[in-house]
Amino acid sequence: ITPEQLVFCEPAPGQQSKLEEKFPQARIVSSGTDLLPLARRVVLAVKPQVLREIAESLRTQVNSRHLFISIAAGISLHK
Image (cartoon, rainbow, N blue to C red; front, side, top):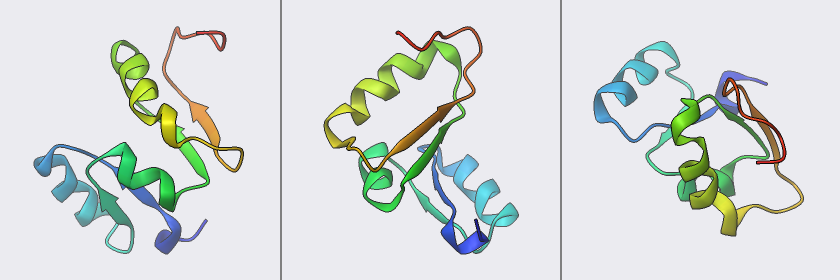
């Protein structure tokens, strides 16, 4: 993946600024609904307690071209 292919979803403006500094060629969006049309592979690097909420918010836009990878500790696949 090239830097131009990276898309980050970060709702907090302060964190967006940090991502822009670290990855100047990447795209940054503020919501998952903006992210999914741009991405095929999605890494969910979120706190376990918010994973369900995020997954529910993305649910209607997920299709067979999306590959989700979660690094949320302690969350089983069947949830």
